[in-house]
Length: 213
Image (cartoon, rainbow, N blue to C red; front, side, top):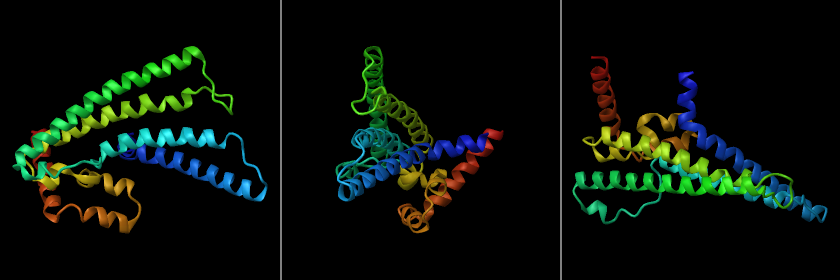
């Protein structure tokens, strides 16, 4: 059970997003070939693709938070002392957490409103909540990932910047579990200096001894 939860912790967004992406891709291909070969496509294709795109977007928000790969402008921050940089990054995570909680509440209100009005999709007889539920689920996962990232950064505050930033979750096992392409894995690993692996291993060993004691 512990292994399953660990796998889900690392892969749930990537796995679900991949499924939505391939569904969207297959429908688009069917639409293209159908219209070019037979002069028509499936009437519900565009709307299903829209549903999938919304889900990929919201799940991607949580995925980027989990792996510290949100787009950011850090030109000014990099001019500051290391501890100030770390403090600003933690502050940013706190701001993101507050915003995600606020957006979670707003999107959940939309879901309740649509449920009460029984709004239906245009081309298929299903509730529009099959799309709008992506909002609270995406932001809910974002809240969880923000909390995880905050705990990580607070615990590693005194570590070097490559360990503190931890892009793609390389140093806490994420890369080996969700990246199955050897060349891509090597490319991501190159973003973290070799010294950071030893530093993280020493941190884990030290933390483990404290926990056991």
